[in-house]
Image (cartoon, rainbow, N blue to C red; front, side):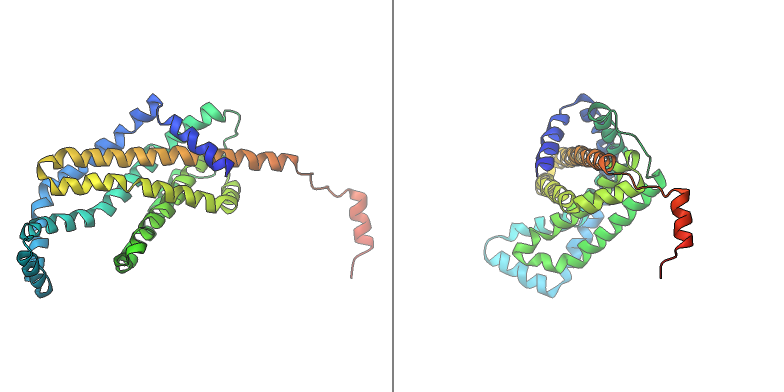
Length: 288
């Protein structure tokens, strides 16, 4: 717990570092250009497609009639954009996470290593190709888990548990790997994962709940069309800052855990090397 809290406060302090703030704008520019470009070409057609699907549904027709009778017929114009937003949000979150992991996490891990762990040896246990394969594989598993668990989101308590748990698992898998890929060997990375998996997953889940805050702005951009162009980039930038904070939290935690692991290994008694005389005795007195 002390390592968790210590790394948390250090990550908060590092978020104010000018280099961290500057790095947060690169993923923002990429995501804003991508989001606004896709929105410009496909937003109207996507909303119209969803609206026509809802209007041809007999079940939804009864629902619209009930809303009209209750004096809430105006909500009909909001439902289709909201459905599009809710469908696109997981894709935006996953892309934001992957872009931050690719462009920011290595730089932030290097920043933490330079400032706090300058004596920590870099063993380069993970290559760029391995990092990309690990990230894409984890993202695919997370998307599958989201799709499979969608029916369970209709149960009120589970919608507050399942999405952050899935995002947390994905965040922990991607960012912990990238943080340790430069400094740890493959065996050290696996040992850190084995010892601290619960705490690392906890960091991911907590940052997953923090990532729910930009969704409010994202949805507001659908409701208030006039503010859409402003609110959506703001939401993406908050996503970027949340993932940057998560990168710093994982960097402080994982590098401190790696330092402890190496300290323990250096204090462990060395394994005795058999002498030639002992080997000769073993050969002359074989055990049964």
